[in-house]
Length: 494
Image (tube, helix red, strand yellow):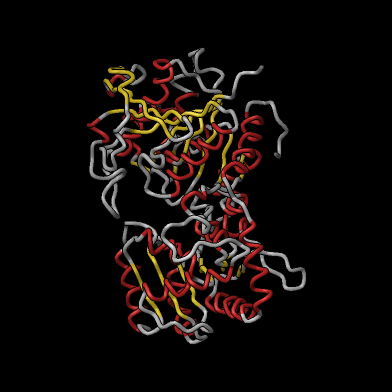
């Protein structure tokens, strides 16, 4: 019987131990799914302060470990924890770097020593393998925080036979954050001066952790197939499109999966009535409950539109603002909910001002509210996602499961996970607009609302949506194919 494939996930966060959003959710979800498929999947993260009770059950596995590859980093300790599904998590302890109020820095800012913090983490993660006796087949690195790992393996660790067979996969979850630092930072990392060049880590005169991952990893993965194509263009590549083009044959795209146990209308404890695709009439009870919770008039013929999104620039708030007066006049009711604890002051004020102008018809909640998010998923008719860009996205997948129809800009993972409904073929799960203009956005909403008046077609669309399954196991199987290609055991193009 062949031994299981060994994968080390190295990331700055993993849900539910510590997570700021989709990065942590993706790392935890994929690791658990692969474990269920027989993979020896393990996760390595920094040990942050115990903000959510995560230290309960942690074991101090390695009391003291000296970082040998770069002497300046001194000692560390390794703790062991476990995710549900028996996935081991190793936490690298260094209070000097990680015992702080924030993971990366205060809102709208970052810690000045982030390059030093994550250089240490990357080295410690690699050296830890000798301490725990685990030598992975593939080191799966996530986002800029782990971008130096492929470079370390091909420089400082190159002559070590224990690391010689390790392959690396570098995952790009979001190009917004690239980990760029002054040139002088190179001395902190311990990497040789020779790799600070256009073909290496140099990016417009700075040291770029993310570019390091792109250059030195054996394969690259983006959070959806469409996003893997988009980042090869100047519109979405954020200056790195040339590198993605150069490595296009080693670049794959796989959508992140979701775990439905918390977002399932059959068992959701937050909604007024649980239901299945065969009980869509009960969704009306959820609609009435949502309207009541938001103090909006209950008018059955007036469509109820929702939007759940973090207050980030690329989430389409400027587009929404330009279209809002026409949108409200269709007529509709509209509810916005911020999907993060973080608030961008400019976009929070923009949304609050918009809602204030249309107080009778719209509501805005700039603070995260988990219960209201569930009520909105179950009670709205349409979930609007006019995002300028979206590597993968998750709320459209949850909305589908609730029979709340996503209306999205055809970009990234939104394009990959929502199929346009056709009344003629009676196939499709939602609505997509391609031109990123207020006119195209509103026109697609009009089209959706016309279809909503045809109750039989609308219910057919809802049933189509609720049948879709984006569970992690399907994405995990695609990752397995890619792992095999990276190890030279599979067919390219999988």
